[in-house]
Image (cartoon, rainbow, N blue to C red; front, top):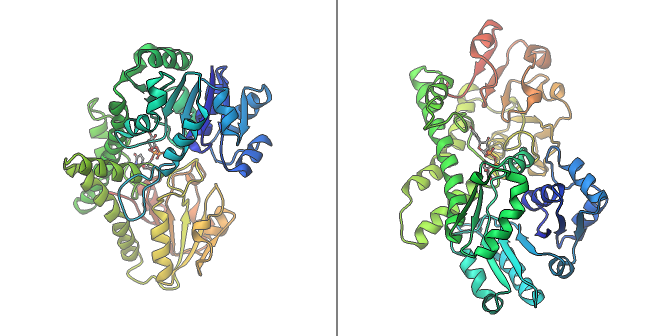
Amino acid sequence: MKLCMIGTGYVGLVSGVCFSDVGNTVYCVDKDQKKIDLLNKGIVPIYEPGLEEILKKNFKQKRLIFTSDLNKAVTNSDIIFICVGTPTKRNTNSANLKHVFSVVKDLKKIIKKQYKIIITKSTVPVSTGDEIEKILINLKKKKLVDIVSNPEFLREGEAIRDFIYPDRIIIGTDSKKANKILKSLYLPIIKKTNRYFNTSRRGAELIKYASNAFLATKISFINEMANLCEKADIDIKDISLGMGSDERIGSRFLRAGPAYGGSCFPKDTRALIDTGNKYKTDLSIVKTVVNSNDQRKTLLIKRVEKILKGNLSNKIITFLGVTFKPNTDDMREASSIPMIKYLNKKNSKIKYYDPSGEKIDFKGLRNVNYCSSISSACFKADLIILHTEWNDFKLLNFKKLTKKKKFKIYDMRNMYSPSIMKKLKIDYFGIGR
Ligand code: UDX
């Protein structure tokens, strides 16, 4: 089929490349000409393991076309995916849909006589599809468009695997024609029809938010259990194992850590609360999750102060990993940002290393320095904070790295064993242990 992905970010580019890899012709459109130029040189603007190789292969076979010409791309495609950003509007909980509606207005001018399926793949609040349909009502009346919700469930760093081996494909539409076409689009990927679900459009929109909010709830739950474990001298890993072995609970997303971050959980939980307000329904659990996660940032900073006995000034504190999770360069809502800014204000000397490189988030901060290696980051540190569980940090010899007799480790991802640390006589602190 001929597809058009509008927006070449984490969602649009990964989906477009993977669709082309199973034989579709895919136009990837972005109004940022610089991005398009990079893509046409085979340079991938996002950090997603494995993407570059598949992109180059399909680009060479002319199944992938990168262009800023929306008109040409839409005219030549049967299915149009809207994959633009829907960030949280400043000082509110609601999703900013200005990019979505500006694309829709463009489509209104371009689509004339050929039937197109218009898909919202970006995460959009419940009833956005209805609003899009209103804008395109004339085309809808002429049966020239169907507006469909097809949310993505891609995790950064595992996006290709999540696309090729999805737990489910959700297609929100009441159009039999659109559903039939989309089933044939996805079947080469999912192979089993029992992973393909046709729901109402609003149902599909809500499934996305409800899924992310539930995962955020699960993480916040185990994080709060970790707080209890620290007071009751229990190891949270036992709790995660004991709970997770119950099929009804499931072992994934039960790893205690710092506050969750990323471009989705924080944004989607807030947007869901906003949807609750719109439909006059109190989503008290989601509200509690958002508050619990926000408070966690302060809680962990207090823990750092306690570990350093309240004396932060001039202390050398090393962050190993600053991204919101491993195998990505994404810093959006990373819990390292408020922590490093706070410690910097308290006159600590911060050094950080991250395999995905230096971060603009810390540029210009007086005593925050990026180190290009683990050893230079850990050298002479008073406290080493393991913030992101990159594989690079799994087997470190801290004594050799710090070249110091006395130092402390705060392992925010429980990567190390407290008993081994004790044997090594290293002053070790974990989460919920
Ligand atoms: C998430 C959803 O998983 C994905 O389905 C959706 O499409 C987009 O949002 P992503 O934000 O990329 O994906 O990362 P994810 O792996 O879900 O982690 C989100 C946050 O939760 C990270 O900060 C991570 O560190 C944290 N997390 C995750 C935990 O603290 N504990 C866990 O057990 C799992």
